[in-house]
Length: 476
View 1 (cartoon, rainbow, N blue to C red):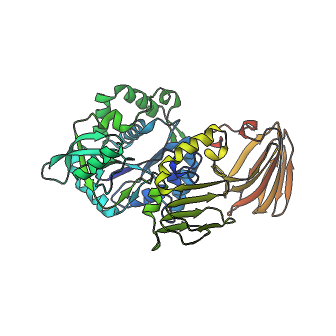
View 2: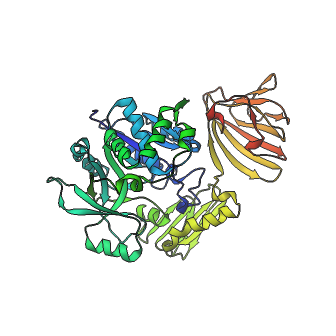
View 3: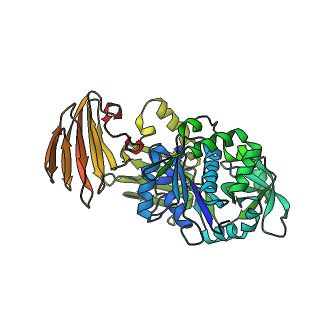
């Protein structure tokens, strides 16, 4: 068995309670809430040292290029990026990771890590994991239980046994409890022995595969087939969609952890939060003497215990006399809520989605294989975008039947194919792309290529795009 541990980072979930920053096209794990790095990057950096193997990452198709970009930004390598065809909750993702590692590296130790947590003392957590190694190697499943500091209804709870397991700092798990109502949470907290369920697990690949074989054989069947028939797509490992679609979504807790007898919990009490809502973000960030945490172009006076954030360089947020408020301003949406109401943001976002407003799920900036696109204007028959094409990347040969396009180079040099003709555009030069014309756009230089794109026509979305290259990863 490899003496090193594989960090397995789960990048699913949307985080609607952190809207309008977190949305389906760019969820909370990839956003910056605590310092200069995203939550995903912070997770990777905690275990980016010689004591651990390179991380194995699991995520959905739509986030693959965000992950690639953030790995490059953080200068972190990986042992693989597994793409789930569609979300099936944590049980199938964890099992896919175990089967993949077992296939590639034999029986291995794996540490399951949600990608969106705040950890107060990383070295204490790593020490806890290392001190649990012998138990994981002996076939135990170890989870990290968080010492609570309040009566929290947003987390699951764990009841440990009264005595230490084999004179260690671990305890046998007696029972898992789902997110409780307030009276139950207060009861758990007052007893001073219950722990929060962190969702961090530590075990070997063979141990977890055997547990699935006993408690969830149907899930094991389809996930095994999805892993066996996985294909490589650029740098990504795509699980087989046909078998994956046969899987019923279920969490790892429901599928296994509430059933297995070989479960141990290691208590951790040095600061942790899953950053589930804006109140948690305020709680975890630095504040001034009046309890104000602010970010961006923010000015305030006579405010107390509030979180104030502006995302736009062209927008100033001014707050006067605010107390116990969260105010988050983005170019296309503003959130104002009392701090004790932040857990209900998701409910309102669901209403916005039902009403058909794209602000519910779509960010103005979207990542693509070739770079990113920012929507500047989106009307019925005209759309203006800011394109950033990364060095060495290209927008593949394609055509549109219901719209024309106009490209203006703001920065860099654009290599353009228009039917059978080649064009080179420098800064401040432009070109029309008529409706029905095959075209492609490349950046062959070492600096980003910045272009203003104006679309006009009766259909402006991706459905009016006929591509002439078939690789999956060019679909976006």
